[in-house]
Image 1 (cartoon, rainbow, N blue to C red):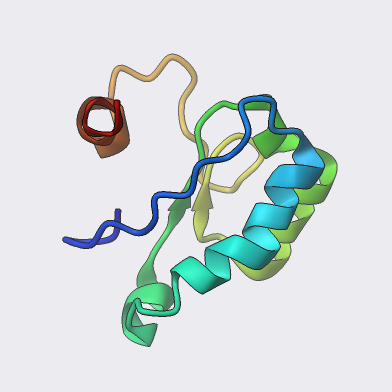
Image 2: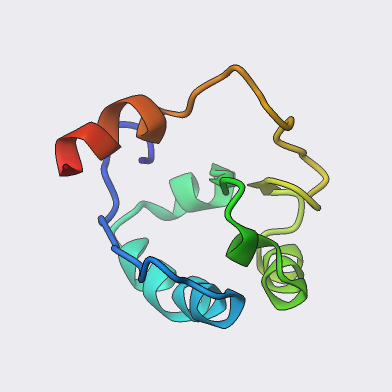
Length: 99
C-alpha cells in the first residue's frame, strides 16, 4: 500500500526462502512499482515483517544498497520494534479481503 494505491498483490510461496525473496525484490517489486510516480518512490519507505526469509544476509545487503535508510525492519537503521502493538494496514485490512 502506497498512499491510496494498492500495489500487487504478489503471492509468494508459503515456504519462501531468502533467495526467492531476494528474487522478488530484484525482479518483481520494481515491475510492481512502475506505475508509482517517481516522487512517491523517492520518498517512500519499504516495510518488512518478521518473516525469516526477509533477514538473510543477501536480502539485507540488497536493501541496504538499493534503499539506504529507506526500509523498516530488523537490521535496518529504522528498526520495527519486536512485539510492537502497532498493526500495519496489511495486518488488519488487506489479508481479510484476500481470504
